[in-house]
Length: 95
Length: 225
Image (cartoon, chains in turn blue, brown):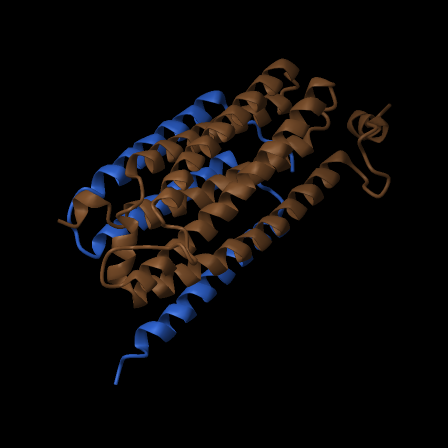
């Protein structure tokens, strides 16, 4: 990895965005949206996680392909775990 | 003398003999750290999957349990962890630039944020403990579904507990790294340990980014009226 050094400005902008998203998710939780409360909360959380991963953890600047394969494999495994478990439980009551 | 970068690298004491260049060594170390973080995704992933299944099965009791979370402490703790991630990122940046003093200062601020997070978590834990919201013989909950709400609290204690344990370990690692930084162990040429501890710290932050909405926000008091 030819090392990439992000500017202070980049990090501070990311931090400001993260704080705004936290305020947004806290504020939105006051609204009554039924099941969409959790959907919206998870969408905002995922935006925050992506920001942290891409910039703070430097995933965006990783040039070593093998490392990216490891990260994608980890996320893919987690999606298998959640999606297969939930399709099982959600469809148990179906006739 | 013709190839300056490799001759410098060959003389960097931090370069292990089984690597050709410093760059190769750093790539390997970063990849190794990510392999470890994937095992951490699996570790927390199991609990997240269990949480989702039971939330689907016991939707009502889950909302009841979630109403006993302290919305403001949770929100403040989220902000504290995000600030700690900023100072950690700035610390790694300082190490890349070889700025020893600001590296140590940023790491120490990160530790303070981590301790602040744990302090607030302790206040919350104390409240839940006093209110009989720790699963087991002393668990008590007024309402029609105490057993299912107890399950919610089992997940709450297990997930935040393991997260807090990770914060404790993270503080230990950052403390060790700051001591080494103070002694001048890291500079422009070699600072991978700072980078890897940073990855760990940010990962623990990401776990909290999901715990916060799942535990505190799914129905805090104002949303269920």
